[in-house]
Image 1 (cartoon, rainbow, N blue to C red):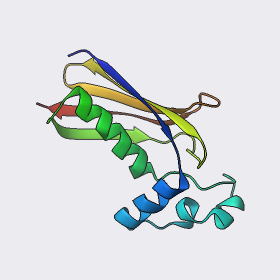
Image 2 (tube, rainbow, N blue to C red):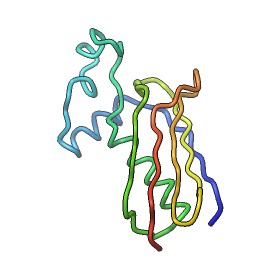
Image 3 (cartoon, rainbow, N blue to C red):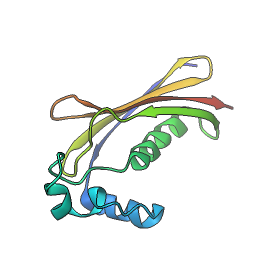
Image 4 (cartoon, one colour):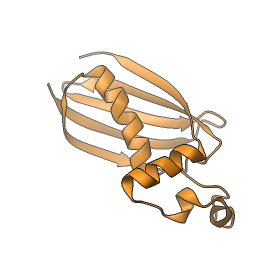
Length: 119
């Protein structure tokens, strides 16, 4: 398989709040700007699962209806509210799709991973 898809997405506090309500993960680092301002991040940051959900949408574009058999992810840097992320997903070999998200402002990697799919 070959192919690549991209998406540019603004990280908005309203989206973090909605994801927290949906997932039940209301950790203040994601939903409380006052709390987050006193942390090393300085701002609220996206849930890792939220970033994975966006990446999953790209996987679906590459392999509509495919089942994910496994997934491995890392979050090397935070994805703060107010930042724009550039997401990419692409076929690498056989049944694997690699995906990533980088901050548009400085190119820092916020999400990296891959998934194996079955069609």
